[in-house]
Length: 197
Image (cartoon, rainbow, N blue to C red; front, top):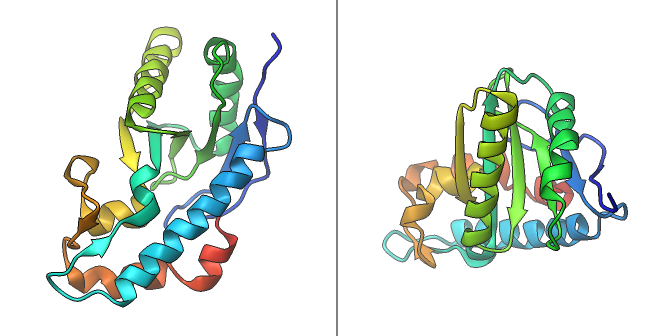
């Protein structure tokens, strides 16, 4: 086949126990570079909104409204290399199309949970990837899936602040304003935003 996935170097992200590894169907990682700039702009916008937040006025979600991901959480996988091996097998199935592919593997919130996360242009594409990958893993590998979901923005911190995707609007009140200082401290320090990939 003419297309294949390329994998980057491991890197850490606040809020996750394990490192992440970016992947793309372009050896120059052009889409990953664009995504990195988008992420920094998105998180800086969120930080600015949270620092100036007043109860009842809401926080503008800004660029996160255009950020979609299909996410598979897999219990029993312990490191990104195991997820990478699954994707290298899977690439022969999902690389036949014309769309560009970019995402990351790793993360997880327990030591024995890995995630495969596909970056998508919209909710429809995210849903299609999610269904396709979940079905492939069930059909060919019988792999135990803990959960799979479509996410808008980053789980850390958007989901913690505003709740699930189905409840998103352009401007939202935090679920609990009391968590704002903790969220800024854990995920939105300037130096963390600057190096986020």
